[in-house]
Length: 377
Image 1: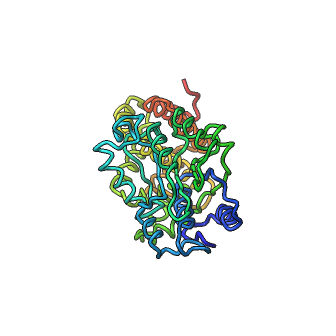
Image 2 (image 1 turned 90 degrees about the horizontal axis):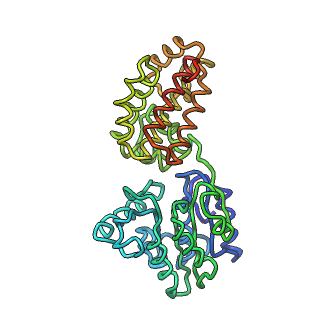
Image 3 (image 1 turned 30 degrees about the horizontal axis):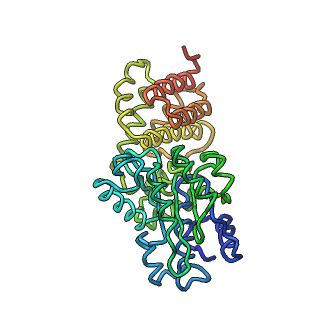
């Protein structure tokens, strides 16, 4: 298979490769599926292949064009991610500000070094109209040597409405030798008018075993850490790499999550206040990670309650195994399945822009009720 660097996405790659080799590549594609599984990397490799000087069977990796893609600095490639307004001279201008000029190349460098690495601009919420206007100007330029330009818009669900409408004009009248690739976790994340003009390619979750192998390649050898990180990553290799590369931060969030569980289940709800403050100081990514840790705690408790957990690789919080066993013993009537459902509801609320403190306080009350089987007040 030509796109051999993409991990365990055979179905998606077969579709992409058949379109290229059959000369049926559409001008707009939507790569959709779980976060951190290689959607943006597949778009980068597609652009590399299409521009390769030698690569009829895939990108050769050695020609001048492929080497430019190795740093994501090829003139036929544009990479767009959500940016804060401060990264641009003005929100309706595509020109980078002084800060953006400094930060954006750093982001590209991180992505080039490891295409599975999670990259984001701090404080970014949307893809701005200025970015799309700049992209329109770039797309209108003539290509070199009859090779196509490819624009990758990562996290296309974060296109502001005016930016999405501007992009729609590009899809309605695409310039020659131009390909647009959008990525999203679900087709419903983008406007129906955009979705209908794209060829959809679905990507799937990665297994724990795949993530464990990739962590090993990147230098993580401790079996218990590999097991814990792979489970908490929940099929998301980018998240797993982020956990590994920022272990101090990861461990601090793990400790915070365990303390939130302890105080949510305490007899004194007022003890939660200080932990709510600490939770609120984390960004969305940190809060979602904390929820994943909490969910894993109750899944572990369910395993301990229903199965033999000795050396069970599915148990995530192995360092707290004695505490978990005591917890399960002291709460014989607890509904751990319900607790996990409550955490999932909290995750959806958080992603739906519900206030972070309110989300955690409601979750704490519901977890208490699920564990001690009392109706919430």
